[in-house]
Image 1: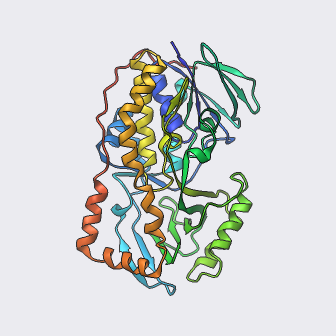
Image 2 (image 1 turned 180 degrees about the vertical axis):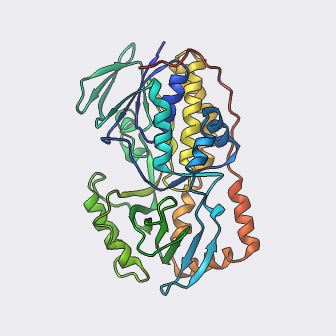
Image 3 (image 1 turned 90 degrees about the vertical axis):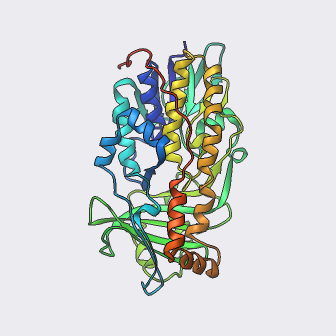
Length: 396
């Protein structure tokens, strides 16, 4: 029953879900708008027993440790490059920190034996029938599936089609963030350097695997902006305008933006979906409960994929039972994780000069820094069932 499942999104939640669905004998198909698996991206981390338990059950611990970054110490400087604050690698990194692109590749490769992947296409219509969902695609022919899962991020296309407009489910938290790769123009060693003025934060860090490369990370406060999410040139202009006139190395970093081969730009926002499923359509990861940065969305996505697939297997494909159990088990846990996203922008780019000085002064004191480090290690957790394996892997 309900073995033919379409998953929208091939970043983190989608391939993780495809792996577990195949593990339980389902037939997952993953559709992804991008023409190929996305490479690069910023570092993401896993922390706490819940995250590590799922990775262990996937057999990924050793492989991910082989590509881990080792964490990145942070140094905040003034306009002349003088150090104001140092933060150790463990302040932002978890027990395992990897580049997002490496994680996506590992999950994709693990899911390939049991999943069909369609790149360069997207869903344009969902029509639920008595026995399934008729799915229309932008390029491919319409197909019928038993279930459809939206694993397509904070700006989920599936959520928009099945649950209504994005503005009903996503709240802007007052900041925007951008990352892009660039040459290591500052000759940085391990770690990153950041510079603040009120409401703006510009930083650059060395690539942990290639000392000739680096990555910029900019954050700025702004009300909700109107721009096209598929227009990187427009996004580059927004970034340049937001950081125009700043000192330190900001002009030099902005000078690399035009030639950046891969730009990430998005609001720092939070998804709040009242119920994660409607009929035969369900949401997982950021589409259901994301928080752009600082909300442990990567770990939550991997945990949610494990539980959703496990509950579908336990219910023998009965989506009504499985979807309800999945949400009941994870709703409180996910909300606890995403709450951290509300603090990220305010921490990195305080709105006033006094706020910047206070952050630097407090965290420069070992006692307070150690307290913050201990608090960072206390992450939300949830009891995870050990779902029995049903049918063997379904190969394609």
